[in-house]
Structures are given as structure tokens and as C-alpha cells.
Image 1 (cartoon, rainbow, N blue to C red):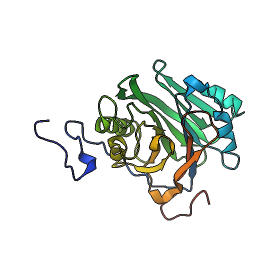
Image 2: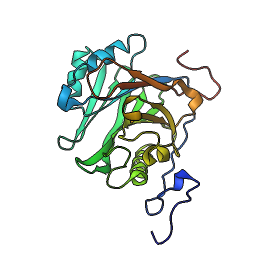
Image 3: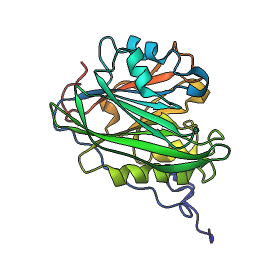
Length: 267
């Protein structure tokens, strides 16, 4: 690094250089009253085959349905939707790069329409190879508000940031978000990051987005970030959902996309 390292008084510069500087993410400014209910869940599909995930999904959405859900280790999202009897209400997107990269997004098609989707390399696991982020850019059919929703499964070992390290992994994730979202988009990034709140991956993501929810398992490796003010997070820090048979618990959060001084959309 030629003697050029980050300012150690500022965690947002640790590792930069040699890693690229952290890309900037635009803050969301709400225009209409709108709340979204979000779920992230590592299904451990190789062991459970989806298991009790449909029960967790259905039992936690009886009052308010999920708008968008992100799944990791997810080989067949359509199976989940059929078992939950949601096949008419949700559309699913599946990304696979070999057996070790299995990511899914499901969005409520009665409320949202798909504008674009994609995926990109984000890091490298020391044992299982490449790790990706996938995304879907969605427009609310009533309010026309646009949501950029991204889903990631992070590299092992835990808290390492994988082969590139935490700063490079955080930079890659933020870079893809910045590149594929547009000005005015609400942005939500979810996943099993295989990194908890003390890791450089999570700490540097916090430099550009609000860390609005984290789970219980493995000291909080399941996380949700958003480009909205934390005051617009109902049930702050999210809620872990039990009853599945994965080695992770599902994590839900309500994100309010309403204008700054308006009443919470979920109240």
C-alpha cells in the first residue's frame, strides 16, 4: 500500500487504499405515504429443501403481507410460494451460479411491477468460491414509488470479508447498488452477510446506508440496510422469526418510505 492506509480514527476509511473508496449512496426522500414490509431468510436449502420456511412466511404475514422477500441458499422459490399458497400473489426471481450461489427474490405482484433485475460478483469465499449480489428494481403500482431491492449471501470465514477482505466486499456491494439504482430510488439491501456488526464489512456498509435490522443467529450475520432515516424504521432493529428448521432465523422489518414529517405508514 506504499505507506498509504486509511485514517484509523475513521472506520469508513480503513483499508482504503488499497481497496477502492466506498461508493456513495443517495439518501431517499419520500414523496408519498408508503410503507414496505421486508423479509430476509437463509433457507439452508441443501439440508432442509425449504423446510418450514412457508409456515414462517405465512404465519408472520397474516395482518400485513410482505412486499419483497430475499432468500439465500434458495434453490426453488416457486416451491415456497406454492406451499404458502402465494403463487398468484408473488413473482419470483432465481439466480444460480453453480450449487454454491443460490439467491432468490420474491415480490408481491399485486402491488409491485418489475422494471429490471440483475446480479453481479461481490466477493470470494475461501472455500465455496464466488459470492454474488442480486437485485430487482420495482415500481409500486399505486404510488409509482421505485424500490431498488438487493440480496446478498456473504463469504466465509465469518467476519473475514472472504478473500478480498471486508473493505473490498463492502465496496463491491455498494458499487453495484450505486451503479444499478437511480436517483430517487428507495434502496434496501438484505442478506446473510456472514458478517456481524463488529466486522469491517458491516461497519463500512454503515458508512453509506442505515443499518436498520439484524438477526440473532451467529451474533447477527443476517442484516438489512436502507437509504432512509432510521426514524422511518418501524419496530427498529427488525424482528427475528422463529419456527423454521434452517440454521438461520428469518428477519423482518417495516421500512417507511413516506415524506420526512408525515405519520408512519404502518400506524
